[in-house]
Length: 356
Ligand code: NAD
Image 1 (cartoon, rainbow, N blue to C red):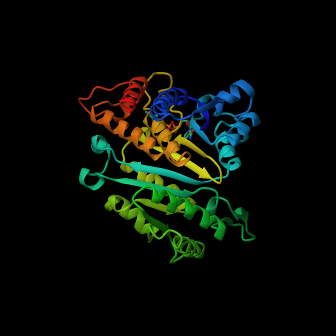
Image 2: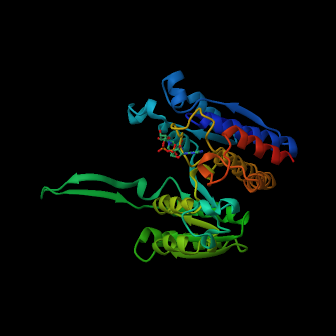
Image 3: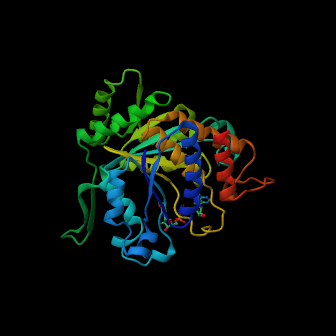
């Protein structure tokens, strides 16, 4: 298993250390053959080399089967031009690795059910995977821009565009992922109004023909936004285009209560990149206060999706569940009357549980 580890900035190195601890434990337990390289990314790379991502690191990423990324950015680099800011490294990695599918799970852990803003009986048992198309649609379509009309008014344009090939490849990711879960896909579109998403619905339905064991349903995006807060347990995999996915994945994330709990995967033709959905949290960096769980669950996703070792992913997820059950809480998920632990202690507890 060839893995490139990019801890990044802020809390990145702290949470990555705990995630690697857990990965090492799993590797020992299941006799996995790990080959890990480390690299600098984001602000750390700017400080050392003047650029957020060196070609050398990009090439290492291309040669690896998976990339584990902590987080990038921080106030120190905020004054820089957009073209050399830490976040540019992420965009370059996604583009160069051809990562067109973004997977964001939103799973509610029983012991944390009261951390959500929604009622216990609505969210209990929720376990959703949002699959968002990442490189097409409204964010990339042309024509785009703002122009001045002869009348003196301005006119802003963005274009929602998808080809059959782009839809087909993301649909296959969704059906493959559903095959490793509860085998249900809800494809979300606005086919009653937008032609491009009418094509989306048609192509997804055609691709579904190759996956007879997966159940497919279609839903309009406005209804989906409503159903997510009304009855989230009805969903397993939600498949959708870029803009709808951007919005729905944030909505789904909030069901679970804390940003420190949520991992993500970006997949493409080759390899994958795995990272927490949160940023570098400069306000708590270096103080042993970060929640390492999103990073640790990103490792679980990597084992499942890049290496097809779902049993190792399950083991990590179960260990996280048990540790929460045993009352361990970092400050962000702590509830009144509970003792909170630091990043290191949480990582150690999970790693111990995996080794058990
Ligand atoms: P953030 O996600 O870093 O932090 C938001 C809030 O959540 C903060 O109060 C932080 O302390 C808390 N938080 C985040 N992760 C946590 C964790 N694991 N445990 C406990 N608390 C946690 O977002 P921000 O403050 O808007 O951004 C900070 C920096 O991160 C910026 O430079 C931003 O550009 C960058 N950023 C990077 C990524 C990425 O690397 N993928 C994503 C988002 C933001």
